[in-house]
Amino acid sequence: MEDSRRIALDVLEACLDKGQPLDDALARHPGFPALDPRDRAFVRLLLATALRRLGEIDVVLGAMIERRLEGANAIGHQILRLGAAQLLFLGTPAHAAVDTSVQLAQSRLPHIKGLTNAVLRRVAREGIAMLGDRDPARLNTPLWLWESWSATYGEEATRAIAAAHLIEAPLDLTSRADADFWAGQLEAEKLPTGTLRRRTGGAIAELPGYAEGAWWVQDAAATLPARLLGDIAGKRVADLCAAPGGKTMQLCAAGAQVTAVDISARRVTRLSENLARAGMTAELVISDASKWMPAETFDAVLLDAPCSGTGTLRRHPDIAWLKDEEDVSRLTLTQDRLLVHALDLLKPGGTLIYAVCSLQEDEGPARVEALLAREPSLQRVPVTSAELPGLAEAVTPAGDVRTLPSMWAERGGIDGFYIARLRS
Image (cartoon, rainbow, N blue to C red; front, side):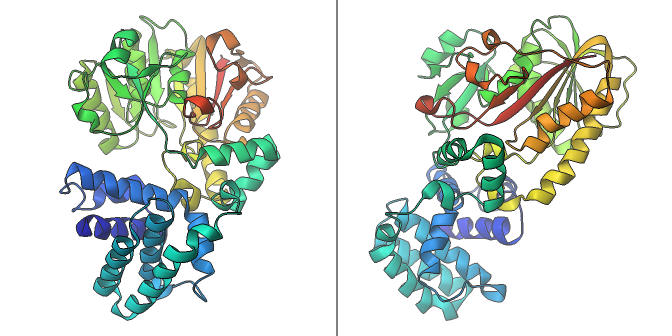
């Protein structure tokens, strides 16, 4: 476990001190793939817990050290955070959490070894009691997110959203066909929208049906944009910003002639591999989707635009600490460019689906209202509750879709998405 904690420290440093997304930092660490599956799972759990509970962890540490370790000593603060995560939330025996943290300090910053030992022993004694009367939902949500969500959804809904982010997300799968059969094979619950849901745990690649591409990993909310295109068999559909390909695979499985566009060659390679595993084919294009001009227009365009990702904090808790209002403002410019260009790719009367896995108002309804004001011939095609079995509450008064992580709480929640359906 010593190697796993050392790798967790490297990745947490890359994430919080250098701004790398958690998944990227894990993928880039040369030691992570070499760990056995059990240790890899431990690293992911430790990092997810530290990030998901960072606010509470920092409250406890802030009461025990006069000032945060910064500058050349910043790695020491990450050591304390990982130690505290184990003591406060993972139930790691105190001697193991403290001793391994002291060893990390000895290897990286020997002069804080004594401080690490003293602080974490105190966390072991007093930390849990200190959190007894605290507000986890509020503490673990950055102020800018809390204020923006409260303004959009109200404080009660914001608290429910933030509480949902503290719970590890289940594993959602989309089956290519025969969902009932694969639900039995995978010991999964079939959700009202058709997604298969099972508890996390175990190697995904070892589950029945993975090798032959009978299903793929995809949150239940992420399946909705493609479903809202209706019957697309034989139709030409462009999937913009397509990688890693869950929606592309949905479109292919529905019988569409799919052109998948993404700016990242690395991500298109991954998309190609996913299609090959499932025995599916699509035209793959490496290009900036806001500039790409094909020879022919399309019956439908699905634009799952680059966004802040604040609807996916259950799975990507690092986003809460790596993004801010400036990121949202910058991304809205990209979203506007993509939306305007997407219209040029549509045949007259064609359908455009706009989707973002963001909870931010500026990235969702505000973008669509701006587009409708700019393009008077464009029409919103309202979504009906019958199209979203079990999720009628996600249909907005305007006829768009807004899922919140607090929805389906009894089933384990769902990612936050905004979806609008438009017709040229």
